[in-house]
Image 1 (cartoon, rainbow, N blue to C red):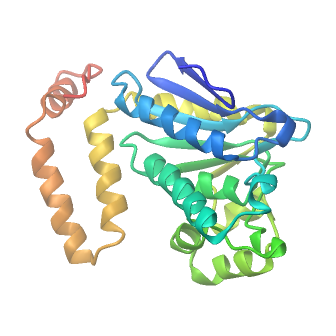
Image 2: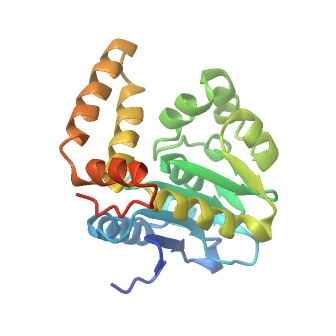
Image 3: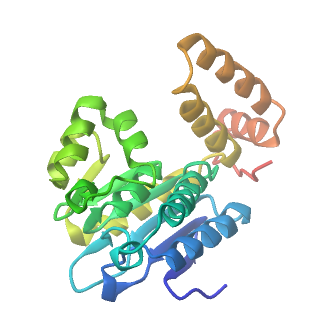
Length: 263
């Protein structure tokens, strides 16, 4: 499907790249882009050939992952319009988070406001050493609305998250790494290839196992330890019914690469 503000590329090895493509607006998220991203990720979720996804921003006049939401669309919003916009943004982020396939955010520049919220919904975050990440909404008299107030404290802890949210000040990629906000930091020219390498590694693993392991970790983190352990047990039992489990264990015993089929 052709999009105006989003580009989707499928590569060998089960990896897909999604580009937010509004270079004249530093890849800011307007309503159309949110809709197109949601449709694009829906298509990737249904594509059995895709086993890992990289999300990044197109080249712009200043390096940008996503520089925020489109302020021009928000300037005159009513409370009802604001509610609907928040719900659309949150639905997109939840779709990414629950895709069932790992999504790596390759944060190649500004990841501010809605851009950081988009990255927070991804399973891994790799950043260029020149990237800036933050939630500056309070400096505009608004609050994060795409999940930032909920995902950020869960990721880095309440105290550090409150500081970023209340000051609105961005942090460098190195500081983001120290806080646990990003997994790894690379030189800008190495970022995308590093994300590709990680995505290819993940794509070579059993896709059902990856999906269930992500589900166990994400859902379990919201449970008590005993509940999480019980949930893990159920998924561990469930995967014993798959062809992939039999293939993976057989391949190990036969000292050969496994040929997973996602079944």
